[in-house]
Image 1 (cartoon, rainbow, N blue to C red):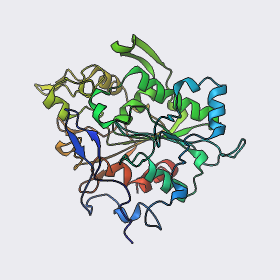
Image 2: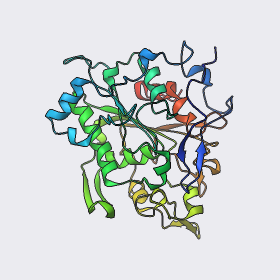
Image 3: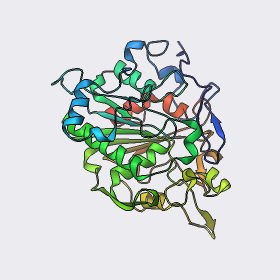
Image 4: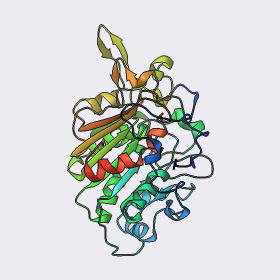
Length: 345
């Protein structure tokens, strides 16, 4: 039975880099390497209410740990938002069996879905809990304002990089896991990559140069980057570095092609591109040639911008409904296989 499209695909979730608004994915069917959408939610007509992330956000046990260890100042709970966070043990001492999975959302999205059309990671949460994961093994926080009208003002800022960084550290410490898995979408991909890579960074609006910290590569088993802009966005070239999101320092500006060489790419992206293989022991990307936000077949100057340098493997989609948001909301089965079995099949 085809899974009912329970998510609000008609909502505008993330404005285009140059100020427009990208509609959520429409269409049906798939070609190429992708699994059909029927396989995404197994055995049901969409997630049952009991398997959606808890409306109360982080559990009391996780909140107590965060407060006791100085993490409460980071406001991982985001109680100001419906669906602002999820994760934590139901009771002290609850066993952690599976490797914890940390989900990092994209620009203007949030940890979980809500009544206003933002999907967050609700589909992934549902699929993982249907397939052997406990709620205590799944974690997400909201790093931005979750406001589509403010999306063009969001960039790879020090507060966002460090929030993602500290959340990864906090979940690992709280669960006692040797390693965690990280699944990131859109701008969350590049934020998470810097949070894991560590080293120095610069944010003129937040004090200038700062230290992210040492590499977290040995703390991450599997990293999954979905629809990231690792080489920038062509849309930002068309508009120029006129907004923070498209900025040439900490934005997604792809630079210009001069005599076969890219010059002027965002300094933040160049830092990420200066080495490879640091995101974890296993590194996968998922991207689409029909991604309506990335556009241009997913290519920047002839290269796939969502591909991770030095990646272990990838899954490429070539038809609707696997556009920018479908890549996240309709691929929970692939996400689980990557983190659990290190497989793209």
